[in-house]
Image 1 (cartoon, rainbow, N blue to C red):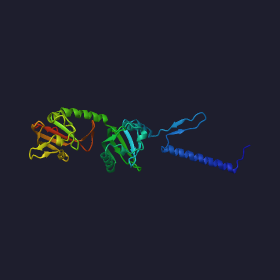
Image 2 (cartoon, rainbow, N blue to C red):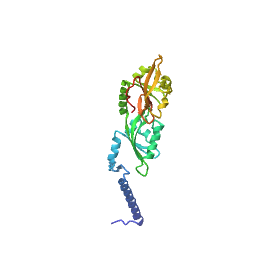
Image 3 (cartoon, rainbow, N blue to C red):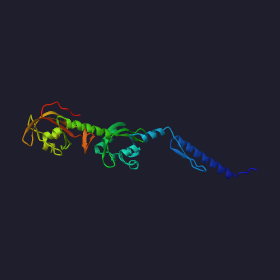
Image 4 (cartoon, one colour):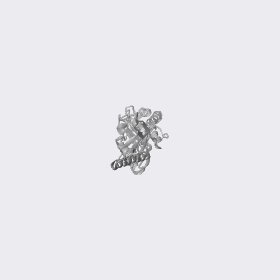
Length: 294
């Protein structure tokens, strides 16, 4: 004989069915919107996990396994996500990178200003920048950015490590630099000599490095006898300027000088390509065609 349920029992059953229906609807909605990645199903003997692979699963795999670094930022520059390759690029762990500010990773204030300006002026740009690794060593990178692609104003960056490329460029440049037949001197923006090739050290002496160009190698214009100073090339390049120089032995040399700003900044033993530049001075004892600034 069937048991007759009371009104309260029937109401409890209805409430339970309503709760189960809502739970099922919430689960279906979460699956549809990609809010869950897996399901844990409770059974008697074990609790199997069912992995849900939506259309975006392959893209997640690409981001995680790509050789380049990948970052997502909010509008304030806070790193919301990065893949393992970006963290490894800086010799850091993911936990130290995610949640930090992208602006703390740039090597200079100029790079921060360039990045901020680019985000303001365009939603898509590409720049060579320098980031700080965990041990403080600058890492040359190519940053490709796509900004503000949705209402949340999220910025996405793809970061390519240029360390090996820059090392190869540096080695090539040094070979050309040292084998040039002209005297080539590189100064920083303050006029301190930071490198000279073999011809330069033969012409001006091996003790010129780290000295002030204006004081170590005083040059005078042929046309009016005024001093040729490093500051003269900060705003404009100089080509085939006739100058006079007297070496420590008292020998007077007539030189042709070409000078201007390079596209590289010398940092330690590396060249980091950037906006502000050191000064290249080429001096020839005879009138020759100059290689020209890059």
